[in-house]
Image (tube, rainbow, N blue to C red; front, side, top):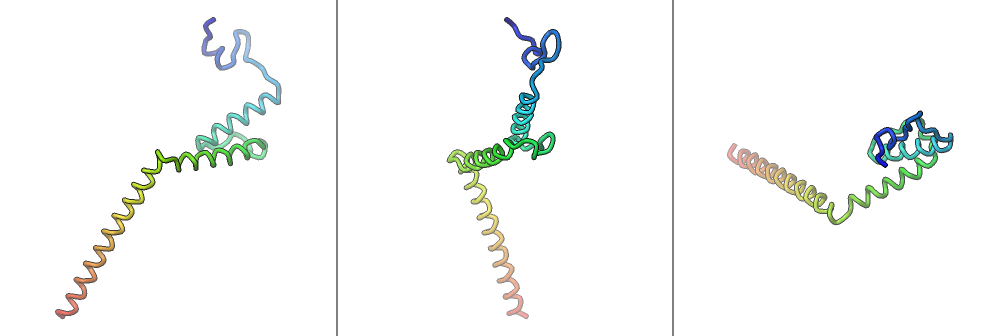
Length: 108
């Protein structure tokens, strides 16, 4: 039986699908949890959704573990290597400037 877009998102041929108050609250929590996972603000007050607090800590833990996976580690190492190169160039420039000013003092 083919389903139209309206059927798939919860609208029937007669009217919108209805749910109980507890189902609607649960759906709001799920939507807010998904919004939080993607970095968007929640709809409503966070205090109204107790599951959201637990979900946020789990999401943060998952994101940190994902960041530290070996596949992503090369990006962290490359960024660190670039910083080392920049600092090295800066130190060389400072050293040359110091030598130049010392040479000028000796001549003067």
